[in-house]
Each structure stands twice: as C-alpha cells, then as structure tokens.
Image 1 (spheres, rainbow, N blue to C red):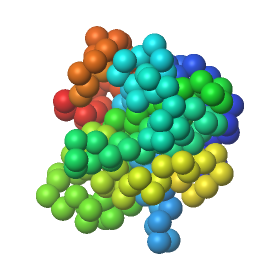
Image 2 (tube, rainbow, N blue to C red; image 1 turned 90 degrees about the vertical axis):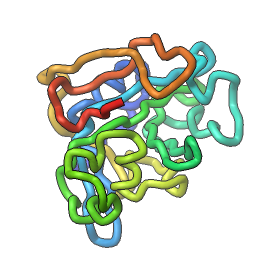
Image 3 (tube, helix red, strand yellow; image 1 turned 45 degrees about the vertical axis):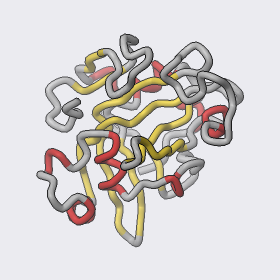
Image 4 (cartoon, rainbow, N blue to C red; image 1 turned 30 degrees about the vertical axis):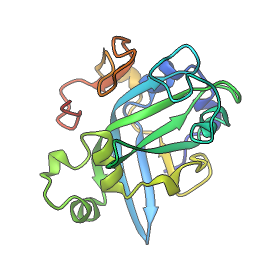
Length: 192
C-alpha cells in the first residue's frame, strides 16, 4: 500500500472529505501495521466556518491547518480524547477533514488491548475511539501523511460507494452545515 499523494489533499475540503470514504488509514508501530477503512468524515473550513479551529485565524494550536495539505492535525478535546484531522486545501488556506470512524482491517489485537472494554464494533466508531485504538496522540500532529509510516492509501473508490451526507455532530456552532459524510449501513459509523 502506498500513501496518497499531496494533490489528492490540495483540493476543496468537502470534496476530500467525501473521497476519503473508502480509503485506508494505516499506522506502522513497533513492527505492527494497524489499519482501517475510513467510513465517516467531517469537513472543516477556515474563516467562514465558526466550528473550525481556524475560524479566527492562525494560532499556535491550529497553525498546521494553514500548512501543506496531507499533513495530520491532532488535537486533544474535552479533556479526554484526541481527534485526527487531515489538512486540505492549498497552503495558507485553512481546511481539514476530521476522521470520525474506521472499519478495522489489521492490528485488531493491538486495538483490543488499547480499548479492552470495547466490543469489536466499538473499537473505532468515533473520533476519540479510533485515535485511542490506533495510539494516535498529539505527537502525531504535523506528520506528513504522504511520506511516512502513518498514511492514507487507496481503497475503494468513493464513486462506487453509497455515501450519505448529514449535518456535523458533536459541535455547538455551525452544526446545521451538511458536512458530515458516512458510508451508508456500515456498522462502524459513529453512534452520536
């Protein structure tokens, strides 16, 4: 499996969010490949999106959102979990796609150890759950996903999938925007 190249990410955030459905997120750690099919995403823009970390411009926390596309943006939220985003758009234009849920492919034993009380269907069915299962922390923020052992690879072309659009969830502002995308009837889509 080879990483997607930067031009894939250097496009409109909403388009990338849709086309990431069906792709495979992979993280190689300690000789083990942990991977899963992306089944749910949310798009976040810059100054015109009040739910975005980039809404008020560049800060130390969100600086990576303004950098090159194809880089990871990981932040800690609600005092208890990390969220994985992938930077989109051209450099200096903020945009990122939140990876909300995955369907596990490999490394399930590792995921089960990291989430010992979760049923298999609940290992990665939410943004905080998937980062815990994969061991993703703020140390993974700023990683170039086009050139590392942490990457997104081709999977099923989104044109051949039944993808549903819906309002974003888990936020308080601009939640009416229809910028959440998920694979219909997939049991790993988040339950929020």
